[in-house]
Image (cartoon, rainbow, N blue to C red; front, side, top):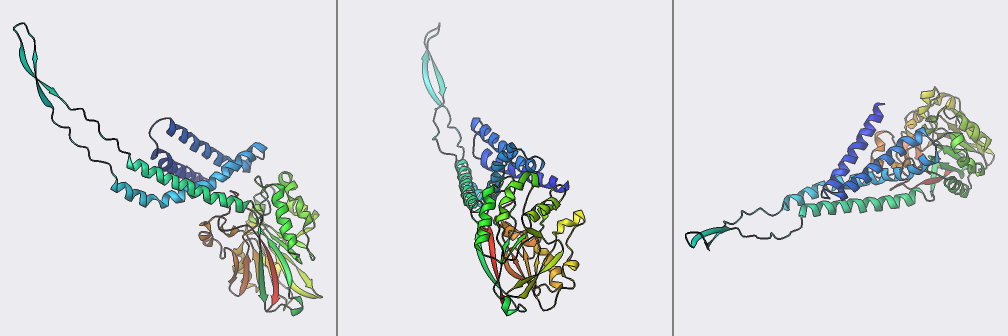
Length: 416
């Protein structure tokens, strides 16, 4: 509850800031200001529908309204960043253009005049003020504020436009060779297609799943590993979107481990695990199995539940997954979150395959992820263990990816 209060507090604070910067400081009192304020309030309502409505209802209307709401989340984020970056130049320019000083009015002129009276003409003096039209000059501060608003709007719109094209487009195929010192030379060349964070949900259609499956099948892999965050809803809501997963091709099987989002579903991931089993996809829940290649055991493939499974007494447990595994055979561990790597390295795991981070999804979040996860994306090491973190094939929240395009990874294991 406290987390939600903070989130909503930040959302309202950001909208108030945008009102001050984009509306109040760029318009004069009147219809234009009222209309723009109404638009901002509408966008706030759509954002709340996107963040809250999609979690409590699954109607077509909620899903329809979620689209502009989530896109506004991305636009709002980048507009706010650009406005904050322009604060200093705006203040500097505003200091130099405070407006023209107000000049004192000139003294009135005295004009002699003659008026009639019963006693005869009489001379008087009349004071007359000069009526001088002040020169019309543009309000330079207003101009600066409007220019800053245009820069922020155009900049954010351009960034989000390219981000939408990336987020809704085909995933990039990343080819990654990884050398394992204790891999049998006869097993060299084993191919693993890695995918994570597909996030089937209210903003994805069946074409989203079909694109990803098509890219996976292009890998011609021995093993397909789906490392969590497959869905954002129940089988009843999203089962039809997962149907293309039945067409995944892998010579030695497709394997799945849970991610944190599978535990946000009412009732947990069990219904999805049963559905995936009917698709021919095996879930590795704190367990392992041998993978053979060219007649020899190439690797021990292990998988653990996500750390959020602890909320349902089904958290990650490396002991049953790794204890007693054969010596001299490299171990490849599937774990949704890279943070598991600190413990996995102590168990002597050779390679961990993870997702969860989305590679940051939208710059500059890639600079924030390291506060929680040891690796954001790509191939790295934790102790003596190698780890590869995929950027994921889908999106969460806004259908936008900036600086972190969606990814399907083809890993080729090689003898060092």
